[in-house]
Image (tube, rainbow, N blue to C red; front, side):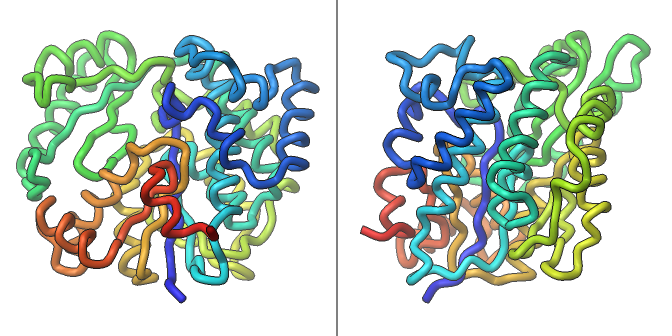
Length: 344
């Protein structure tokens, strides 16, 4: 039996290619109906209607109040589909809103309460839509760590953010990428100050707010008012948060977990790189499983493992060689990798 750390994706992972993902993969029709009922009670389109739409609409499907529920359900469905006769899950983590999915996969929230948390926070962020995000790489195409480049970019972020009219912060440390958040003038200043790379960066993220910054304090406060601590419980799997901290079964302060989830996790930088590093070093799994939807998080996981010098890897070539020999990473959103972790 293989051991595995499970990783839940965040916003931006349900796109045109993922339309119909729940219809293709969600394993529990009764649970999906319960999610649909919660959406209907709130006056929102059901997940079944969104996922079953004739065509993907960026304006409709990427909105926080729709995307969060779709992504949460897709991730939870994939978690339920993992073949437990072949794979022992030893810990769960996530990227950004993937923390809400991780809480449900790890048992600290019931599936319904996990859905309530993800859907409520996505709705609150969409209603407020404070600031935005842009993404920029600091690793080159070969993924060889160049920490001096990262320092230069973070110094630039600090310089811009210190100007009176500009707000700019590190939102997510995402492997070889920096996800930055701030107000419009702060984001524009950064985008003008850096050279275009890989023909697509810097890339502004549509329908994204300034997640994981102090700009989200009003959203965090509204979330705490709407989502009581009684929804939370002891996890049944170790949970690794956006600081690399582990919440252990039978040893978790549930009130502190609630406070982190609807406080620090919303208003401070999310260090996904550190979470993956902690997962590798603390649990030394045979495999990292990235749940769907989407296929974009696998690169950040691989880059984070390289930055952690996991199993001696120091570049993209090293990772590809190891992956070809014995897979270290399985992305359930990829049809060719999904069978590695699911029953036939």
